Image (tube, rainbow, N blue to C red; front, side):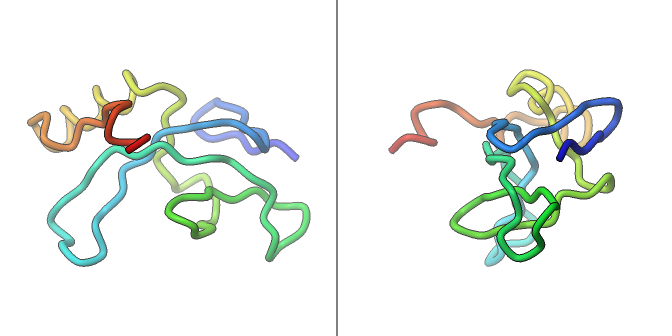
Length: 92
């Protein structure tokens, strides 16, 4: 199953970028890579898999196909680079 979000089609296996708010510090947002997967709780639907948790993949979710797009949106909404994602922090 594909889901179109802002004219983008997503398929299970895609890696996308989302804004993620720290559940312990709600005023901190970061850009985080997430996997698009088949939702194990709702067959036939897609979900985002992030931090060992499945999140609904809906048209209301701000999803970016590239890190550059996510960083540009982050700059627009938050005005600084504190939340910029980097490859080294993701794999450590």
